[in-house]
Image (cartoon, rainbow, N blue to C red; front, side):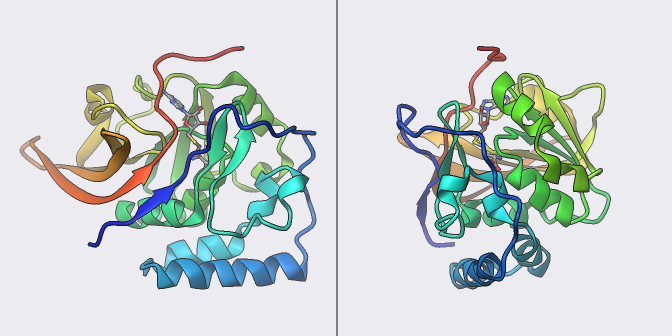
Length: 239
Ligand code: SAH
């Protein structure tokens, strides 16, 4: 695969005011913009039809402040508050495609953020367990009515480095923040034959990696393109 660099973080001090208003109307204009977005990421190399159908289905502007209504379908990351971002749609599609989700796969996501990635996984029929370390973002998602349409997503406030040992093992694990290394506790929560997709620090950017736990317990590592994510941080943040 060729090297692409897609920026999916914004500077932490970005000064954008959030009025806490998320749009709830999915107009023909939004649907049209979404179709164009799907075409864009198809042209960038996404081929998994289930992933493309999920992106076509989900109103991404619902996940953003109404100030972003007109730009929500650009293939870009946007701020979601607390210095965090909703990932670029291409990045979401790329990671989901690498996971090769099968219906009813039990998937652990580290870094709920806006919950957009979690919804893409849920649309591809996964059973999703998603963890967020920022209490404010976790609480915002509790108020976000659209998420009620996905009973196959369970939300957790916690430190993703710990995973969810009581709910594991998982068929798939996806990390949506820049990991300093491959967390051993997450590997331990992967089923035999399970797959983890994780962007691992490599200097200023991250290398997308796919780790497969083989039958003998060994790990097979595959390396893909470079991306830029917000950091995966240790511990919870309740401020
Ligand atoms: N998947 C998200 C992308 C969010 S950006 C989306 O679709 O919008 C990465 C998220 O990871 C941020 O919300 C950040 O707070 C969270 N994060 C960083 N380190 C974490 C950790 N150790 N455990 C859980 N979440 C973490």
